[in-house]
Length: 193
Image (cartoon, rainbow, N blue to C red; front, side, top):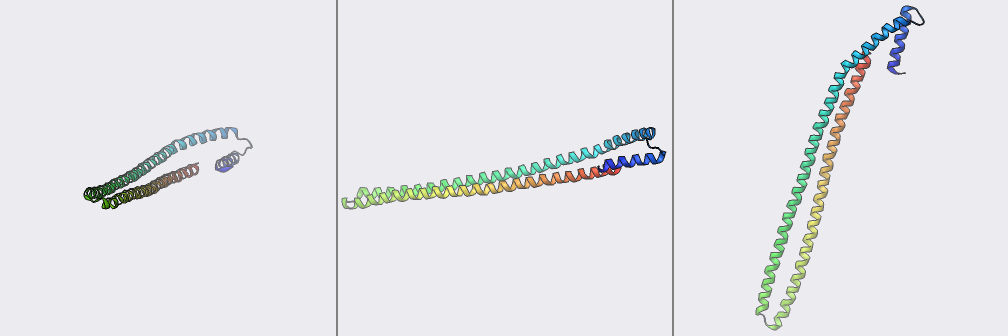
């Protein structure tokens, strides 16, 4: 079966026809030697094309890998930068909350020092409310910051996934091109046979 079997059958038929014999041993030996020599020569000539195709594949895969690695690194750097910026903003917001709390607390404590006994109870209640309000604001900021970091991580994961998908597509294209070149090389080899 196949193209090689068909070539072999064709050669045997032509040999028999040309010498008019059922078993043309000598003629077959001569032609067989020529066929082997021709096959070896064709394989040697095809080797350069195959080596070129493999080198091209290696180059394409290498370039694809470099582009993809660069895209992944850029995505990671962007994620890290976004998270660092979020951390700086979070720290600034916490500092602003603490400053506002400290100023208000100092004002209330100053009032407390000069207040009459009847007023002190109201000021102490304001201080307790201030403490509760400050704790709630800090907790809210922590929760918002946690959500921001989570959102940034999700966006980063999407960027990384996109970069990895690009890398996979590039590798697929390079492999498909290699396969096509290899198929052409095989067709040429079969045509030459």
